[in-house]
Amino acid sequence: MTERCIEERTGEWEAAVLAGAPAAVAAQFCDDGLLLGTVSQTIRSGEGIERYFDYFATLPGIEVRERRNHVVSVTDDVAINNAIVDWQWDGADPVTARMTFVYRREPKDDQWCLFELHSSALPEANTGLRRQG
Image 1: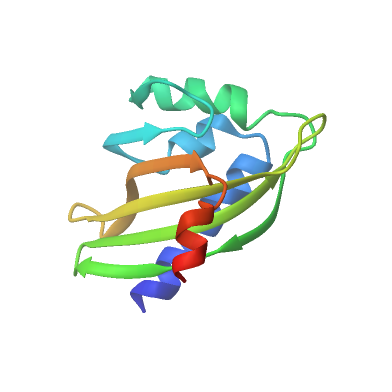
Image 2: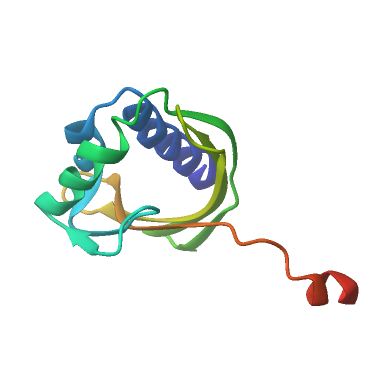
């Protein structure tokens, strides 16, 4: 049940980003949530999360080509989705991001909120590691 719920919550986050709705994206974060965005050099919290998505969620032509989820439950109230997401937007080469969504169930309303989101561009494969298998 938790895996499906977390995949759905991640899908809701993605839909808000693709709808160009920064406030709706930010509203999915816990009150004490943190963001380490793909195209930012700053750790963001509070209003800084919405300001980031004022930029990112309004990139022209933004779309997700594919999202591959890997959800694990840490405790009954904490779950992580380590996802690989293929992004595209107008005027840019496709970007594959590795994204770690840390969700926490809030006791006040029994809802899952996004406690921490870290995203970075997937690096090129290291040829030395490739040879090792």
